[in-house]
Length: 391
Image 1 (cartoon, rainbow, N blue to C red):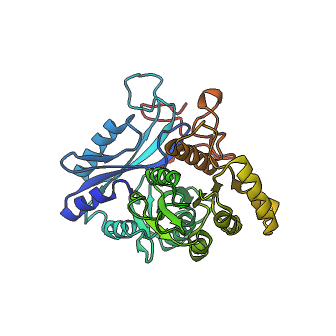
Image 2: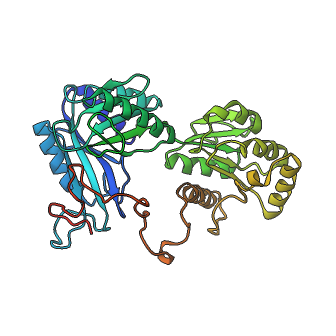
Image 3: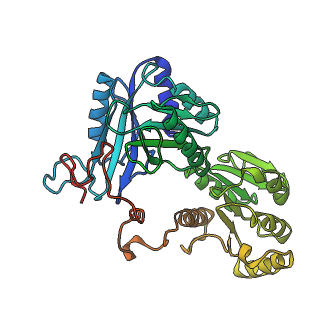
């Protein structure tokens, strides 16, 4: 949604109806995750993507029909074993796509969603995706809640779940009874959590930091560069960063502790004990999801000795990735930035970080342990696909 927000806000402001296609669930090696969005205007302009090219043509056709009819639909796409020309995913995955009409009459809450997301405030959109009279009904959860899914009990249950999902930055389907009962599967509700961008804080205004900041922005992070030396920490040297802060690193981190969560990456590139030891002493006691420190093996050993002397425990030290980055043979600032970014991604996903050619099994991870047999949003078993196969 954030990728297409600027364009669709203009479409919405014009008053013309457009279609919004959103991936609401995926199985096996689907190319995009829930929340991936493609929008189609009344005159055929397309922004965004739901599959990276596999099914966009059919989604485009469905979107045009939705614009004409004003009625939301859910489509499932998988690989077809019977017809090589059928619309599907050659990767063997399956994805469900909600295609819904958006204009001031059909989605009056969209303005509030766009305004909150555009200003960086957390907001979630809950949409009924089970076939029936409630299909497409929405509830927007933010500073104030707008809309309804058709039942006060259901609204209350979804609000509770959506607030938790906003806290973790997760998006996906939740199942309820018609009045919001838990452990029921009468209704499927897709909750798209538009949490503020993940934070990356890069400490040390060096050439490697400039490359890390560029890669961080490319990955969608809100990037801050911090250094105590004002002559180096300048906007001219770090044009891609969202913020450039002149302050002692540990003092700055202490000021922003309430913004550091498990979605935050802290990249300590100072490799100078007077900066990184007090910084890491504090950083290793935060909830940051990734804490990496640059330096040679010798610098790392010295750093560990100093941190132990400062009272940092072994469990806290184990959270530090030092030397930072994956072993890619990186030497230049740009190569090193890719190495660090790769380790951040691997740590976030708990992946092996091995070449895919040396691994087996599903590329995008297995179905959740203990999950019930997959069904379509209408309740149809996953194997009973119209024109596709879930195998």
